[in-house]
Amino acid sequence: MKRKALLCAVLVLLSACDAPPAPPESFAGLGSDAADFAQVVPGKVFSFPEDHGPHAGFRIEWWYVTANLKDAQGNAFGVQWTLFRNALKAGPSQAGWQDSTIWLGHAAVTSATHHYAAERYARGGVGQAGAQAAPFDAWIDDWRFSTRPGAVSPLADLQLKASAAQFAYDLHLTSSRPLVLQGENGYSRKSDQGQASYYYSQPFFSAEGSLSIDGKTYQVSGPAWLDREWSSQPLSASQTGWDWFSLHLDRGEQLMLFRVRQTDGRSYLTGTWIDREGHTQTLHNADIQLAPVRTTAIDGRSIPTRWSLKIPGKQLDITTEAVNPNAWMNLSIPYWEGPVRFEGGVGYLEMTGY
Image 1 (cartoon, one colour):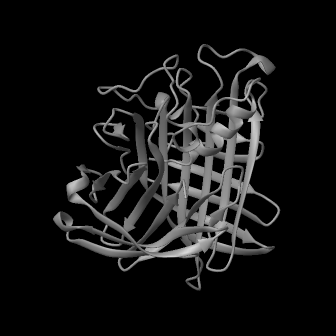
Image 2 (cartoon, one colour; image 1 turned 45 degrees about the vertical axis):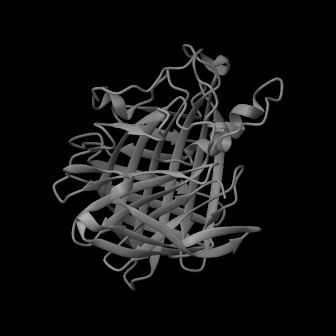
Image 3 (cartoon, one colour; image 1 turned 90 degrees about the vertical axis):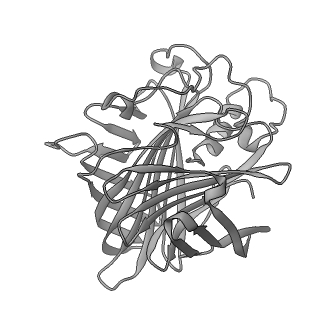
């Protein structure tokens, strides 16, 4: 699902209001009413490259990249880059400073011993941040995710860059594989009450380039994953947070799954199994056995950083382990996000609402 995109988005949204709204019931206010915005409904026909760009009628969307990287010595690293677009009100955008769009960027680097995260804000309409479909480009200040000149297709050959006080990365991402529509042909349900997003991924990226932490630079490479989602009300009022996995299996398959937690103790659990050729199968609650098996105390919270995951129908029985259990994104709205590993592969985990 991605997920966290929303958390900080809402903080910016709320801070821009003249009068303080009532506290939201759902996580980060993502279950609040969005009747004035465009609605997510089944049956959308995706169009590329147009859908790589922004969707002005919807309240929130994001461009989200994670990468599981190693250097020549086998040291593991994780990289995350996200750009969020948040509409403060429904209706057409205005020019210049009258534009009612807020942009938010998150970037992070994780190693076994360090985790650094940074965020940036921008107002729409003045060029400081934005996104476009062709040539594909998404940016906030000098953080950028864009198609390289001469690329055959917008998402086949890209450059990903971000930097902050204690880290930087500059990665080249390539893929010749098809995009993946999540859920029901891109209609991704988030609850039994009908909340949903439009959601597609490119889970077959290969990344290589440079990564710096505390002034030391490494040459790294590994698999990367892009998620694109947009919605206006992705959660119900009773949903408190989520646990989201994107996994690269050494045997060639990819797996996305998420669990959205509810106030009554139940969860909405679903996922997508992606074979080597990019064909998909939707996984339902009965297909997945997911449970935390160990927690880490972080900032006064108990965060599950080791998980048991079984999908009997796919002969998958693994335990995911955080590369760095302390991968806490201590930003405007804090959450956990970092690389994970397991026997037979690597991936990323995001957890919100703890």
